[in-house]
Image 1 (tube, one colour):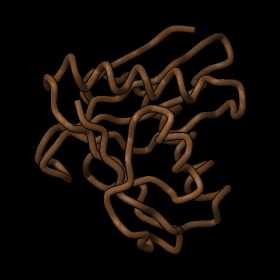
Image 2 (image 1 turned 90 degrees about the vertical axis):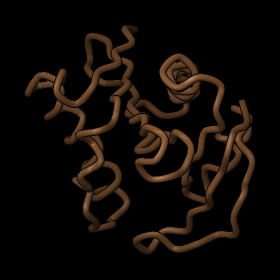
Image 3 (image 1 turned 90 degrees about the horizontal axis):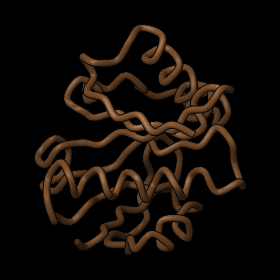
Amino acid sequence: MEKKLKKFNELTADELYDIMKLRVDVFVVEQNCPYHELDGIDKIAYHLWLEDSDGIAAYLRILPPGAVFEDPALGRVISARRRCGVGSVLLNEGIEAVRELYGALPITIEAQVYAKPFYEKAGFVQVSKPFDEDGIPHIRMQRKP
């Protein structure tokens, strides 16, 4: 499995298409949640994914400090191949990439409530009450350096 980390302007057209297709397939279609997937933040984000001969196995984006939260953030965390550990590998790669890019800062995420145990295994703790985002219960979580 190959790790790829690119800024938006470094993505090829095919890479961007594959990333957006995965995100829309899961976050919009599978979850039956019409929302603005293209939110304007991708252009300032780093895009990190794991890929093999079958394509993108897992993806997330890394947001710089101040883009959405005071701290750097991870978002759009998604695994195309579920229950095989690739999501955990990607999340750990994302945490390491944040450390390399921005230093030892807290990392913030907004997670779907059902995924709380997944993020807790990586050291994230809940820092907000549940809230509704586009009809899906979410919580804010943070990982200290």
